[in-house]
Length: 334
Image (cartoon, rainbow, N blue to C red):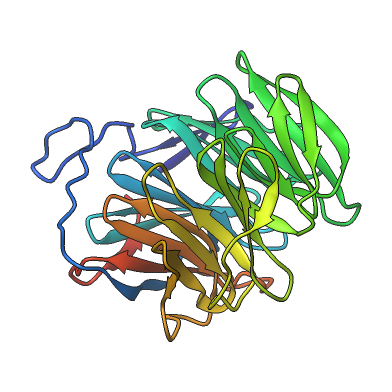
């Protein structure tokens, strides 16, 4: 159920009140309980919703995935929990490209033409900013929220910051479109920056980088590539090439965390993790569709994407690495 309320563009969605319901029906904090069983690669769901799924984030025990119709269509949200995927179509007028939050129950999703949605305990409010640029990435550091993007035609990038509840342009007209931001690191089209107070410190990565994430400020990974995969590692000083042996496709997704493995996702179903000795991949790929994001949730790893390079009639695709589960069902969100 969706209600639009007045000029504030307020969105209320039934069934998403920010609390976390466990399997017994009790409300409380989500606790990850890995099964300890070995994992395997599966195509979890295909033809999901009416838009590509481009990003994922864990809101307690539920994984939220956002995306939309490419080329100016509306945004979509999918939720995954306990073997059920539910979808909300046309949640925003334009496609959403990234979602992130610093705590369960509150998140930000950004997208085309300056679209920004802020959700708190299930109440969503538009905080759109005055730009024609697409905001491709967002990161909530617990104090400020950062959104990065740019204009593909002009090749210029932008950085926006939400400070004390207000969005403002932090830096504009930057060389190279910016794609993602994580913990003060920004990557884009042959550019990368580190946020240092009120300044951006430029570092030349020598590559087109689409996503960044790390285990610490001195153990950061960025992926991308044009025509072939690229994986770079930041050691606290500069970017260097990381192991790419066995990878075959340009990459769009990366995930890791302290004491966790490195996971990547890319075109034509590229999905892999690095176990310290080398890449372990889904061979053959579980789909020919394209993955844009990878997200680790307890002992499951989800790969989100779809027919990313098609305009019109878009749909979502979700693959999974994890212990066996029963058949996944896909249905509209109540």
